[in-house]
Image (cartoon, rainbow, N blue to C red; front, side, top):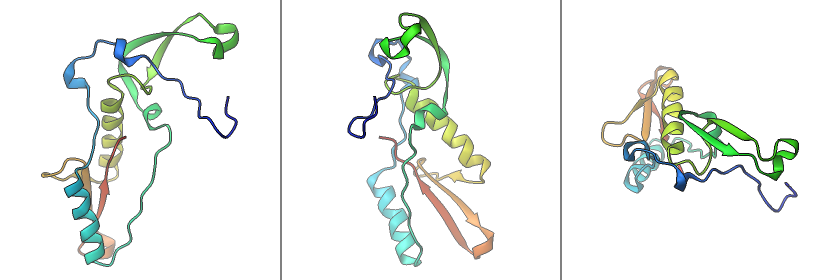
Length: 140
């Protein structure tokens, strides 16, 4: 129930899932990388913005098949077995799936990951001359 004080969210019991270690990943830009991006922006007199993507994991699809038992929040479907098609908070592979989805979107927009820092994406903006646009990705 959303009453302004509490945030309800469907969370899976990810600690119960068996997921290969290579599927557990969450993209986090290093502090050094973030400082470099902010330094370059300040040095060139550019603006910096920060944003939060609400319910980000729900944008990613799972490649594994997960089942959950519907709780009382599902009213007449409570107790039914449900198949999960989207990455949910709590699944061990959700961070990786969201990272893959967000990477695809950034590539479609013309961004490329930095060689030294894979969670900093950049693209040259021809409109502005020799300037680059940077996206630093941090998943919490």
